[in-house]
Image (cartoon, rainbow, N blue to C red; front, side, top):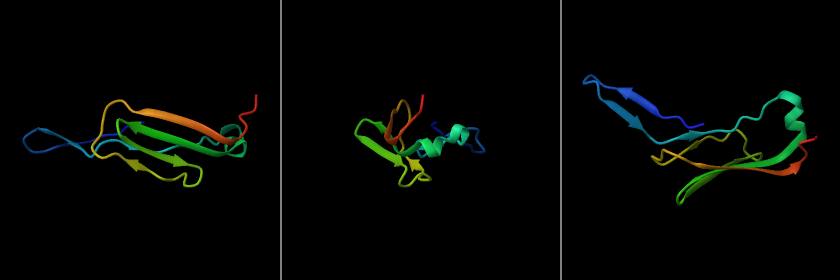
Length: 83
């Protein structure tokens, strides 16, 4: 889920940019959006955290120059996953 921008300049050096980006994709398969009505996905690393929820599902998160391993917490706040 992380994405890093990589640009090569004329000297051949790599320039990494701006940390990681996150977004949430809710699959249209099996009527997922009808089954899960309220949800939240929280991304965190150290003292930094942010979340995307069903209140603003198209939100995209850009971390402040962070990379590496992130903790991701997925919460079902209302709805059912069925069987």
